[in-house]
Length: 191
Length: 191
DNA sequence: ACAGCCATGTAACTCGTTACATGATTAC
DNA sequence: GTAATCATGTAACGAGTTACATGGCTGT
Image (cartoon, rainbow over all chains, first blue to last red; front, top):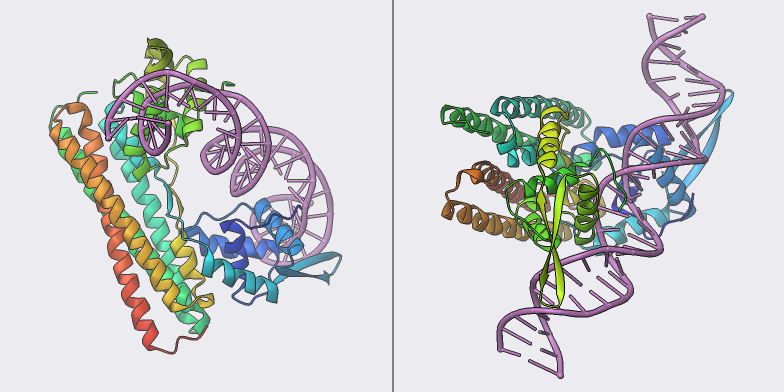
């Protein structure tokens, strides 16, 4: 894997996951990403995790260790001292980017004049179900964080609570939306 | 520009902007995107607008007309009948994707154990300013929509109101966050 | 005259994805 | 034995970006 310097935000995100202290395989790192990152920052595909790990290793930001496990060799990565330093430097000096949002439901509502109101209502209902799933998963994450009262999870708790607020607000907006769509159906629904 | 079939969501978004009836230049289309799309769906770069217009034209979904304007020729695009049909087909049949979010502030808070609490507070403050800007701009959009009571802006109003709720909720979350960060500073702030 | 906006693109590149390929281990 | 999960990658592609290049028009 070619070294890419400087790293992307996704690269730093993975490096950051390793900063919690565990020595992880690429596979496990992907699972961690799916259980935390995914709620606020698109989790990378499996193949990208391996690609980033290759880059991080080439840059000396992570250390790899191969362990024999029966007939196969499993490679685990841990954060290096340089990696920790580079991560701190990035957090301290890189300007904050605004959030990137692609809200497909909003796009479809924006083009609502081309759709059947029933279709729009169904899309809102779908989004509600998706949103409820996120909330369920996030509550599970949150309670697991409470079971383990270690200090290093302090900021993870903060972000989990933020996420609960975020998806809760999203959910309420959808209810408002559903109501207004229903009210609009009373008026002449021309297409 | 090579034809790409099927189009991406961004392509349909631009096609959708043309469905409001105006005949626009690439430049104007970009301005419309910056004034509407941008609040809920990342607005494409100028160069991509031209690329998409080329693809849309190649697929017969928009019609181009060149008009002489002094020494230069200005090309305007409008939605074709096929384009309108294709847009409807897409809206009716394509499954809704979940929203894509890359919330850089949340990522930095998640890695808060590697930062100085003052730095985190500053980042939250920055995000507050950005959020207030969005709200100001969106309120301006919303009041312009009210000045023009044409029916075709009905769904645009709906989405603008949704956006005001969305960014309003984001803003309130940031206040909560700021408060919790301050409270944490009372406790031992080790790094 | 000069800045700033209007207008149209091309080229190079990057990020990230899906699809493919392979094989070991574990649970039923 | 077979399905699911663990584990590690490669290859091809796609969507979108920044940087570059060009030039007319407009206001001061």
